[in-house]
Amino acid sequence: MSTQTDTRKKVTVRRLAEMKQTQEKIACLTAYDASFAQLLENSGVDIVLVGDSLGMVIQGEETTLPVSVDDMLYHTQSVAKGLNNALLNTGMPF
Image (cartoon, rainbow, N blue to C red):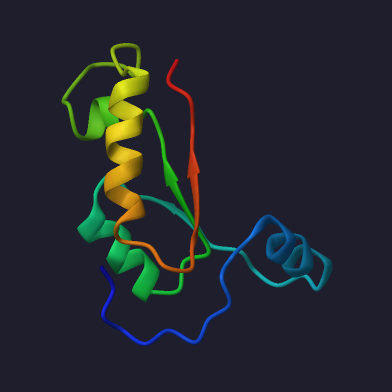
C-alpha cells in the first residue's frame, strides 16, 4: 500500500535484538486499519501492534472481553496491507 520509497531495513526479531544490543530506541505503536498502519510505517515506527483494545477503541465496547479471534484476524489483515518494513505484532484476545 505504501508508495514511499523506503530504504529502512525490514524489522525482524533478529533486527530488534541488534537494536537492543546497540541500545537503539525501538518505537512500537498500535494500529487497527491499513491507513493508520501506513502512517506509522511512513513515520518510521519499528513495531505495529494490533491489540484487543480495538474492542473499546473501534467497536465501542466497555471492555476487551467481546473481542473475538476473528476480529483480531480481520484487523491484523487490514494493518498488514499498510506495512512494508515494520514488524507486525498481534495479541490474542482475552
